[in-house]
Amino acid sequence: MSSTKLTKPPRLRPGDTVCAISLSSGAAAAFPERYRRGRRQLEDTFGVTVVEAPNALRDDAWLYANPQARADDLAWALNEPSVRGIVSIIGGDESVRILPYLDHGLIRAKPKVFMGFSDATIALTAFRNAGVVAFHGPAVMTDLAEAGGIHPFVERSIRRVLFEGWSGVLEHATEWSEQFLDWGDKAVAERTRDYLPSRGPVWLQGSGMVEGPLCGGNIEVLEFLKGTAWWPHPASWEGAVLCFETSEEAPSVAAVGRYLRNYGSLGILEGAAALLLARPMRYTAEGQWRLYDETRRILAEFGRSTMPVVANLDVGHTSPQQVLPFGCAMRVDADAEELTLLEPGVS
View 1 (cartoon, helix red, strand yellow):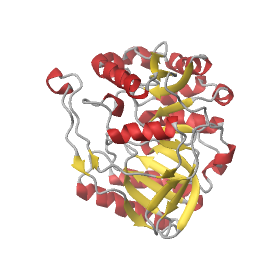
View 2: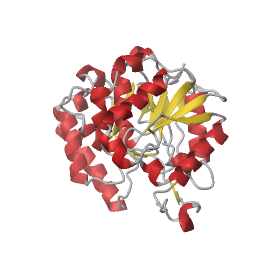
View 3: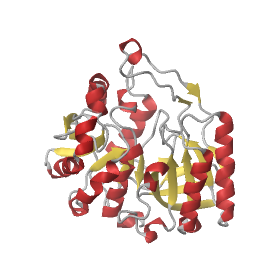
């Protein structure tokens, strides 16, 4: 699906109301202080008002038992006139169960900004299937709830992409962290995380310049959709700039290779324009290079040893994370080692 066929939701503005939603995990109930800080920082930083979807603060057991109620929360946010945008509270592992209850026609009829990552890949894909741009980016309880305030890199990316309708050359964070400070331990919950210097993008292969619509998400979550009625139409992958991230579970290099081989078997690698890989969480330095080697090996199996591939991007489970509008056109210039968003994601 080309970006020209996708509807762009209206941009956010200071004073807007944003809905916090949980389509899988009940983490907000388990760690209410962490959630409240994310909500407060979202409001204070961007001048918005945050409201919760009716069931957003339920616990894990209730949310698990009620997938239709979670889908109803998304419908509520889309139907509620005062709500201008929707932000995922946290990921999870089974929001795929809401899909039988989702109304893709409603998503198409009432397009609004939706931002999330990880298990929210299910919702991002539903928006894509409905023909609406959606935003791969931070959740309320992750980068938006950072002790000490939202990282300037995250704030700048959200402001530019969701509020200003920005397009241009992607910036890359100069530092990164995967440190986890126990959200339930008051002794460390207010401590600022430690960051390491970032070496920036790692260009693995390819030359020249290509363009295509961004699509993808969490590569493990996308596996839940393969073979189902909610897997995107084959034509929607043609010419795409694939963008994949891995979760905190750190799937093995062999597993990621098998996922990629599956994309090759489906004909997706053959028709893709380029491949973007997030910085993987909880990988050793050796594990990262093994992952890069495996990626090149799988691409070569399908005759794509010259396709541009760039890794170590700030779009996954490590922090800080930038926002990418899925469905919008991206230019990948392997010679200049530059990624350029060619169009805004909002209207």
